[in-house]
Length: 313
Ligand SMILES: Cc1cc2nc3c(=O)[nH]c(=O)nc-3n(C[C@H](O)[C@H](O)[C@H](O)COP(=O)(O)OP(=O)(O)OC[C@H]3O[C@@H](n4cnc5c(N)ncnc54)[C@H](O)[C@@H]3O)c2cc1C
Image (cartoon, rainbow, N blue to C red; front, top):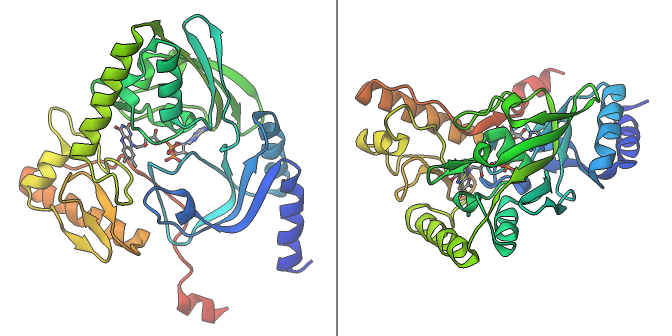
C-alpha cells in the first residue's frame, strides 16, 4: 500500500469514532494561533467512543495526544505525529446532587462557571475567564485569585492509554501548583463538589474577576496565558519586567507590554520564534535575579523536517 492509501485507510478506521481531519493545522486549535499540522485530528462523537478510539490507535501503532482548547499549549512547527484527540463534542453538564455537578471534559470552563452561578452554587468563581476545558483544567490544576481546581474537585473518570476505565478521587491525582500526576490517559469527566451560595454575590465576584483580567492581561492578542510559573515567593511577571524584557521581540512573538508573563503572537509567529524568545527571557532573568523560570505552557509536537534533509531522501 502506498503512503497516500495507507493514510486513507487510517482515516477510515478512525472515522468510526468521530470526525477525522487529516493534516489539520493545530494553529486553528491553539489560543496562540501557532502549531503545525496534526496527522489526524479526531473529535469523538461522545465520551463513550473514546476507549474504542484508543484501542484503534493502539492497533494502528500510532501515538495519541489529547488536547483541550489549546490555551496552555505551544505546538511545534512540525505539528503532531499520530492521532490528536479533542473532546469538543463531549460537553454535557449534569447535577448529581444538590451541590454537585458532573461535567464532561470538553466543557469550556467559563461555561461551567456560568452554569454553577445560575444554579446558585459557589466555589468556581476564581476560574471566571480561564479559557480552557474541564479536561485541561484538571491536568493543569488551573487556578487564579487564590483558588484552584483541586479545592472543589471530587473525582474524575478516566480511560488509561491501555484502555482501562477508572475513577480516581482528587487525592490520587497529585494536583499541585499548575501540575498533576495523572496516569497516562484521557480524563472523560470530572465531579465538582460546590456549596449553595447567594447568586448575586457569585455573579458580583465573577464579574470582578473578569474585569481584573481585562484590565491586566492582553486578552485580545493571541496568547497562552502565563508562560512561566511563579517561583516560590515571587512573580514571574515581576522578575521579567525587572530584568527589562518587556516588549522584547523575536519575529512576531513579543513579550507583552501589558503583562510581562504573557508572550503574544502579533502576526505570524512560529513556535521556533517563541522558543527562542523564551530562552532569551530565561537567560536574562537568570543573570539579573539568579532565578531559573520554569515554563507553565506545555510544549508538544515535532520539529519541522529540514529542507536539506528532505532533499537527501
Ligand atoms: C488568556 C488566558 C488566560 C489564562 N489564565 C489562566 C489562569 O488564570 N489560571 C490558569 O491556571 N491557567 C490560565 N490559562 C491557561 C489555560 O487556560 C489553562 O491551563 C487551562 O486549564 C488549559 O485548558 P485547555 O483545555 O486549553 O488545555 P490544553 O492547553 O489543550 O492542554 C493542556 C494540557 O492538558 C492536557 N489535557 C487536555 N485535555 C485533557 C483531557 N481530557 N485528559 C487529559 N489531559 C488533558 C493536554 O494534553 C495538555 O498537557 C490562561 C490561558 C489564556 C489563553
